[in-house]
Each structure stands twice: as C-alpha cells, then as structure tokens.
Length: 338
Image 1 (cartoon, helix red, strand yellow):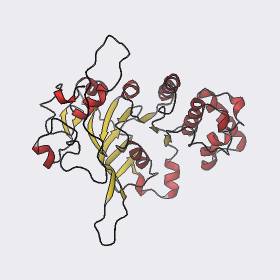
Image 2 (image 1 turned 45 degrees about the horizontal axis):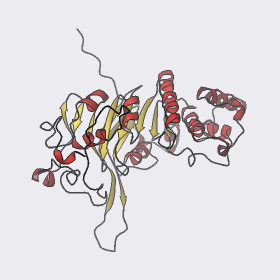
Image 3 (image 1 turned 30 degrees about the vertical axis):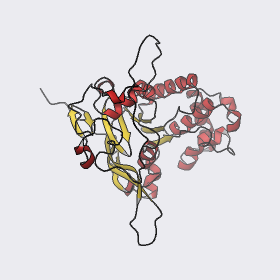
Image 4 (image 1 turned 135 degrees about the vertical axis):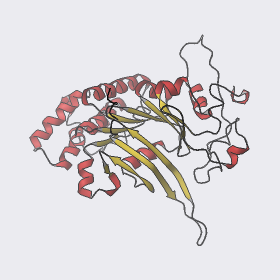
C-alpha cells in the first residue's frame, strides 16, 4: 500500500518576528517592543486556523505581518511557494489577489467618501482586468452573495449598520476570489445575534469558494465553532497549538486552561471551575526572563524563571511551550480557582 501523500501547505510562516523600536537616549542600549517573537505554522487549503489570546498578545500584528502590511523584523512568509518579502511590487500586487484581510472595525475600515460599489470594486479597479461595466456587474454579484441589497450599491457607509458594514468588508475581501483570508477579529465589534450571522456567512463562503482562514479572536467559543486548529498566543509567542478538539479537551498549557475556564456556560445548572490568573500581562518591551508566562503561573518553578521552554510536540500535532506540560495535563492548582 502506497504512503499517503503529504499535502503542500498553502501558506507557511517561518519564525516570523515583528519588533518595534523604542525611543531611547543617545548611546543607550536599543530597546524593542517584541509584538511577535518567533512564530511558525502552516495553513492548508480550506482550513481555518484560530488564533486566540489576551488583548496585547500580538494577534493583530501577526495578521498584518503575514499580509506584509507590516514588514517583518525577521523570518519569512511563504505563500504558494514564494517568499512574500522577496517579491517585487508588481509581484506583490498580483499576490494580493490570493491573500486578503477582513479588518476588525467595520466603521474605520471603510472610506466614508466612497460608495459601497466603489469600496467593494476598488480591488478590481486596482487590478485593472475588467471594464467599468464588468466591474459593476461583479460588485452586484458579490453584494448578493454576502446578503446585501444590490440596490444599495450607490449608498455610503454611514447609511449601513455595523453588521452590514462588515458584510461590505467581507465582499471587498472575496471579490478577487482569494485563497487565504486573514480575519482580524471580524465579529468582536458586532452584537451577539449579528455575530452568528457573520460567522455563518464566513463558513458558507469557505465551503463555496474553498477559502482558508486565519481567524483571529479573543473569544474562544467563537474560535471553537469556526476553527480546525487553534493557536494560543501570549506576549508574542505561541503557548499551545493543536487540533481543535484535542486542545479543548486535552489542554496542556496553564494559560490555555485559564482562558478556557473564562468561557461562559449558558446552562445555569452547570458549575464551572474558574481558573484565575494572577497579575496583568507583562510589557512586551520588558518581557520576563525564562518562560514569559512564569510571573502569572502558579505552577512556575525555578527552572521556569531561568530557562525559556521550547515549543515541543507532546502528542501528534499538539505543541506546547511549557517545561511541565506532560506532568500537569488536566490538573488545576488551588491558587487558580475562584
């Protein structure tokens, strides 16, 4: 029997870093905010990778760096076999047809001086492959696909609700029929009822168009609903990454356990154990020595304070950055409990 063919990743992120320099006094040591500090992963066709973590952990910066909207400080992003950072401006423009982004804020991400038709059709105008008449027809098709009334094509963004604006952003992202879309917290600014509609729309579009998503969110219940794999970030690093069910049911990292315990349960008869983190997120400009999570982890020992743990594969496709992940699986410390 022949061996199963290994699929080539659609997108490969290799040790990507994004450091922002801080202003310092002359002749003093240079300091950086390490927003993204050495992240690697792959993304395959029609797959959704969920990226979760607290505010300030570097999720959005990672998404923008992958898109090359922010040039990386180190590492590389390989898309369809080509290193994005090595592409010429012309090649980068052609590549952008296949790699798009949906922004978090449906208000700030739309130009208030453009009509809906102009906003959605702008990628077509930039690529310059269709006539004006063909562009208008394509825009109307995409508007109908995302649930917008085509008669609103000449209206302006301020005439739409938040959910409708996000549909405009989604339409703009898919009009060039991309392969990968970075979804930067696309539902966090919307009401809960509207969130469900937008998430279902994204899943329908994925099934219809064969899209791959990098879905950035701080809501673990949403991520669980949409993702195939989940990556947990903390202070610019990957703490844990695994297939969805394995991560949610066989959690290894104390940080992931604390995040999952904070997800509310709808059934009032179910009593859920709360795992409380100690202190606040440290500054990425002055991260702790050793394990960056040791200042908030009650499992921390002297080894954690002095030696940085590697991202290790403890089970098949289940990676964790913790010195004692294999010993603390499924266990909670009394200090975590509410």
